[in-house]
Image (cartoon, rainbow, N blue to C red; front, side, top):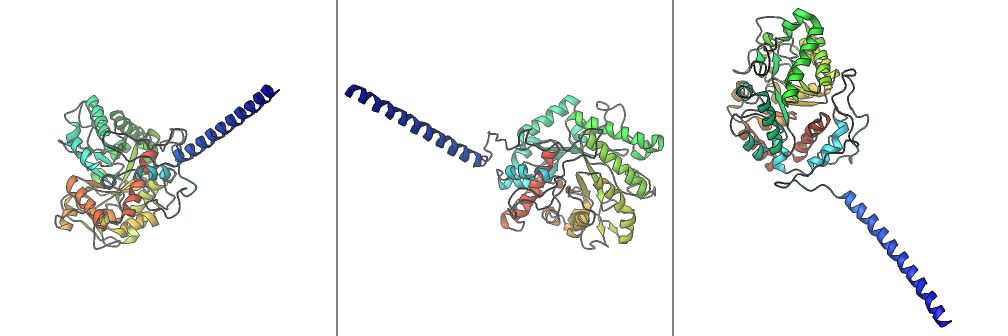
Length: 432
């Protein structure tokens, strides 16, 4: 009896002990899961890649849509789920807002130096391109003819892949493949049988069906080489062969140019290549801003009834980028080039309703350097409302903006917000 009694109490004790142990393990698992779920990703470290991208199952649908539905795009129907007023979180419900949460999480892992780099698209240097990426981490490279001329198609692809390998965030790779007088790739026989013709000539021969086919061919060429963005179509209205911009324009009136722009945007989107409307607010009959300041004294009524019409069509078709010119437009801001003017950017955002990314024309062009007396315009351009600064004076412009952020001249919240928008676009376009 005593032995039986001793055996029973020992069994009960073991049972209670096991139950306590199981309970403790369950609590540890729950607490551990909560901690792991709330930890933020570690900052990037040299030689270490930390992915902050959502899984494919978590991501909204890609920005580029199937050809049969070129207008379908993940425009969020609700504001971001991030806490209201959180520093650096855009408060708009724009074209890429479905990706703001992902972009914000990634932005939080980045150093100030990398944040500054993410608002620049540099002209790709002939020498030292990888070193420039290592030092500045730009959002992207603009590839000119000198990049393509000495390379085969395979060499272009491998070179761009090496650039992404050097970057902590995959890059925009863009060029000006407009057709006609501005072709960076198709001018070389290793990439195309003949250069792309101007859209004006293509339309004259085959109408809008030919424009669609021509745009598909451009997008296919860029995509096959590893590029993800074209600085086209030209949305400027020009019907006068004496205008500087005429050779690059569609050559039709506002309505005809608007239809060209709309079709181009839809075709680029269906092809999986980002496109850029240029040159806002409309070039008109102005002089060449590559060689000096150009003053546009036309009334606002002209822009409303003509120049803005193609841009509105492109914006309605959900163009992801708009490039702003360096013209001084007196009816909008007589005191600064459009690219450096908050008033011009407010018109683009508020009156035309553009919610994608705004970028400057190249800040090294004479219209800008003449205006600034040779000083960097990067800070003024960024504070004017541009999300991305196109620059051939890479290190000087980068340093100028970095110094302005460090001094407080450029608020950190403003920089973070721009970077969130840029990263959200990269998520939407499948670049990140």
